[in-house]
Image (tube, rainbow, N blue to C red; front, side, top):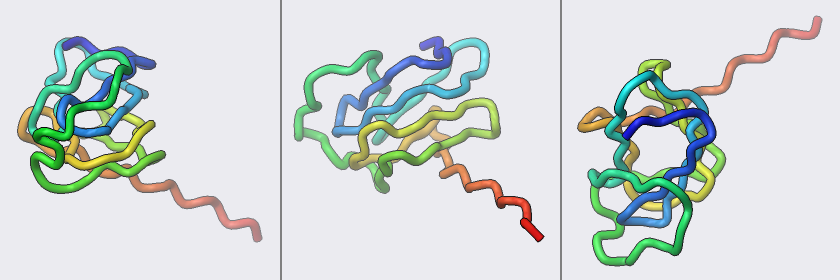
Amino acid sequence: MELKAGTRLRSAVSEVEVVVIKAPPGDVDLRCGGVAMLEGSGEAASSEGAGAGEGSVELGKRYVDDDTLEVLCSKGGAGELSVGDRPLVLKSAKPLPSSD
């Protein structure tokens, strides 16, 4: 699916919802728990298959893939975010400058 900034996606296997902050051109295979994410927000996912895969997604955290894709978690839950089989990593905070 082709992603653009502001697109809302939800997991098909858990409660996870994300908002795209930055996306590369072309199609992106964004998954949660190994299953492709669905566009838009909707009713909660069924509990069947919830927790598929390991890990969890934390509310309010940003996840990145090689600085080409960045998503913000708007609803946390079970499952690991990935692009294809490559897991997204938690974006670390930038250090603040010293205020000598």
